[in-house]
Image (cartoon, one colour):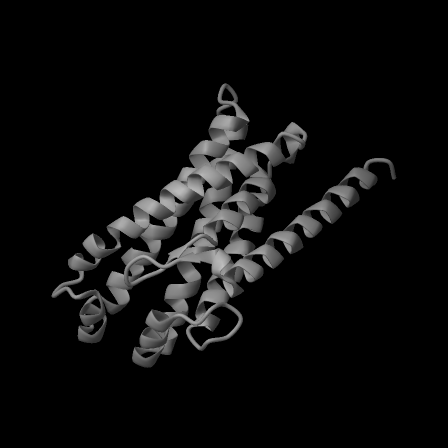
Length: 215
């Protein structure tokens, strides 16, 4: 019985944290806190709670938070839950199924992979401190978000003339140059905020609370 109490407490804590991060994602997505409008595609700051949650809860928790982010992004294409997304509305008009895949799959992967990266660094490379692990994971999260989202956008909609017209380019590769500034700003902001917050929170967790087994 004594062995079960810590596990029950740990599960309860993780559920509370998961619910808290989900609420933060929804709150940020529904308000200006979650986006910075620069260029055609708004810079999203929603990767910040995804990154922190993935570091705190591991790959599985990160994937769930990524799914909340992705589902909210898809809902925003219709003007629901998150702030309305004009570019998303264009994509839905072209193909709603592909838009759903574009909104959901990259975000789930980002949360899952961020949790994996942090867990690997902490569990397998013990000579690296949690501070360095948080820094690397926090850099990887927005970087992976940009790579997976833009890559899938190019794959699914890169030849569509309407999408190319929105970006003012003639080929799918031109989309990268347009989004480059957004990616740099998103990477910088997310890295600074999420690395600092995650490191502060992880400091209060015992070493065995990094969820490498949640992959």
